[in-house]
Image (cartoon, rainbow, N blue to C red; front, side, top):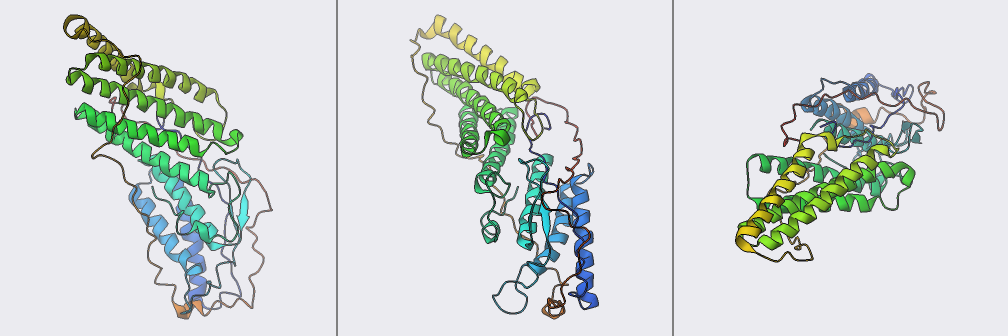
Length: 384
């Protein structure tokens, strides 16, 4: 999978001590601060641990988010902002912008940034996003090209839906499902990749060109799949001339996908470099298109004698089932430690001491060293 899917790097972050000495005026309040520090560190370690499982990641993220919400949700029986929301500074890099961090003194910024990383981690091992609920709450809107900016978030969401459908397509092929279903799923997956590509059109090419090349090569690859299996459906319906033309169109899209693979490898930009054209799943399609086209041409010469149309048959395909649906993301319940009584013992009039863990404005943060996940045995169909 590491050589099939393009992945932008994880966000990096500066350490956060949660040292609210003076403000945290009770043992219970101090314990919350200490637990925030340790659960955050544990979650960050999980991102770089090659042995981390989805179950461990969920436990680690739930523990931290349950406590962090004590700095976000109103705990005093009113609808006012939580008095602790803006007390701690957080710094995060952006996956498309290198190692220079952006900072906000806002617990919601920390929540959406950390949740973004958790979502990216899940895509690396197999998604969830918080764009509708929490990102609009940010006091400082995301700058253009930053991870929390709508175009970037929307692209990730569409890409992940497309990649989830790739798994469905591979499974359908392996189980020899109906060609019309595979064609429809492939067509809708290609459309997802095209939509993701178009979403990045107005983003700075310096940070988006490599990502766009990946999205384009996947779009052309699955359009080749769609036309190939649509050709099979047409042949089964004794429309041999149209089947030939559909398979010729599949050849064009496959050739363009091969060319885009080379362009993608040569394009500089953030993220890993996938090698889809070297994978059996990619290579098998080229052979399958060639063999199926030759079969159609032989049968047309001996049996059908149909004229091959100048225009490729339109792909008016809609999958009746098998489409991937995103799983709604739900934050864990507020930690039982965060009670109104403990909340009342945080005294903002005292003010926190200087946080020695703070970094200077616009200081470079060391990138996350992600684990090298070894690809599994390539069966030619299973892509994750």
